[in-house]
Image 1 (cartoon, rainbow, N blue to C red):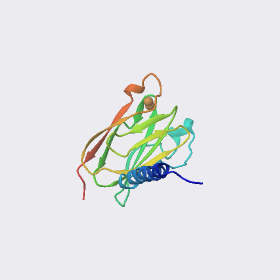
Image 2: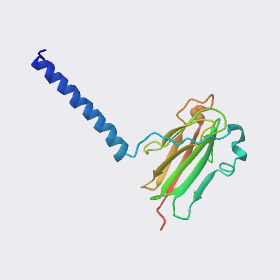
Image 3: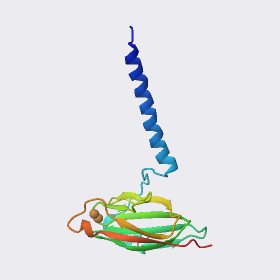
Image 4: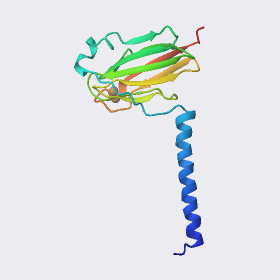
Length: 159
Ligand code: CUA
């Protein structure tokens, strides 16, 4: 079977394009630290407030300097809605919902995940620059969806 020259060229071009797309995805994943949150940890959505993991939501600083933030999402607020973390430290968010699916996005960072009732979403980040970051809910969760927001304040790096 004879393959026309132009056909060959287009075939090679398709391979080059696909490789370029794959490289763009890998670059985003590794250089940008983007990846799907793959934590599979279940929780009873009706007992979130008495579950020891979320009984006292907020910021915990571990002895190694890393920071963990537990947040409970419900219609139509985050608890806590104001979070303060230091810059330059590994920060782990642990999130769960007591009712429906909510979103948790900090525009301009790699923090963006769904909060699914029955599960604990977990993601890691690090804020390099002090400042204020908006938390927005990007999953439609009912009448008050558009007012569901919060704020992360990143303070100067502590030594
Ligand atoms: Cu919560 Cu939209």
